[in-house]
Length: 370
Image 1 (cartoon, rainbow, N blue to C red):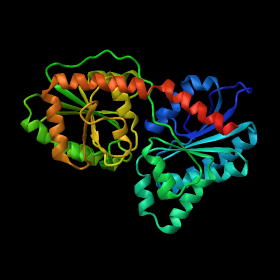
Image 2: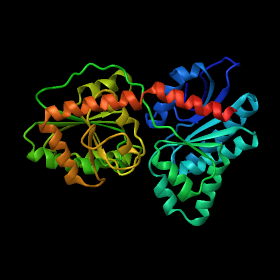
Image 3: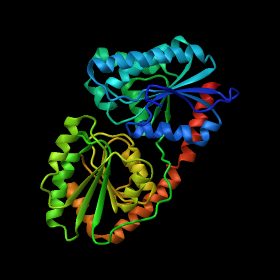
């Protein structure tokens, strides 16, 4: 199926019907992985899912045309399936949020319950930089929803107190479905893994400078493997240029999924994600699930998943020196890497299991259905 086709995940008409609006792979990202996991999970046995796949990589006029087509398909779905009870909309901040406002408005016309699921860590910056008129529009959009799902408890006070949102706010931390992987590490070197889009906002230019600093002074051989592609050709080119003439080996792997992706996690010693802006990245939770210590930044809800010095090391965004020091510290201390990786696996099992996620989402759905 193409990304513009509608997918039906269940056919039992007796189950409550949920219309899911979100992306499916490709491209591979946090939202698309989550939506795919839900459709393949146990929760799809308890609800009838209809899916409007809104994945696209267009911009400018093409993006406007694509959004209009998605809106037309939404209207068709709501007309053809009057049994739809809840419209579950996945969105990020910025332009995507305003695009999804049209979906919210249409769903309200059809008198549907609306769950707006906000991903990414840019909402605070978007809100604070918005004009008063835009802030009123954002607040009005949020208050049209029956509930907003956020990825960490720290967002509740922001939406309630700073934004002034009056609708229900539900905390729904991310979770991952991770297979049991067999470790395939190379004892001759310490391998760091990055997984995500190749763009500056992910801190990859900072990582290039930090790897230079760490590689020149570290007593262990370092390797960096980078999984993912750019959101644009220009951003990927800029990232690749930053890693030219490195004192350590750097491998660009492209976008991987399935067994190929998990094999890279199995080969790594440390996971690194030095983003400037995030909320609760799925890649960090995937790394924790397979027992990798994590080096990342103090942004979004990350500090609610990683305790500094326990499951990994936290540094401030843009701080290349601190990032290099964290890399060096874990590179030379194998015992610390192992203990942090074990702690990460334990926390993942306790707090970020997909079974927990499905149970909490089911509770949220049923409260909306009431």
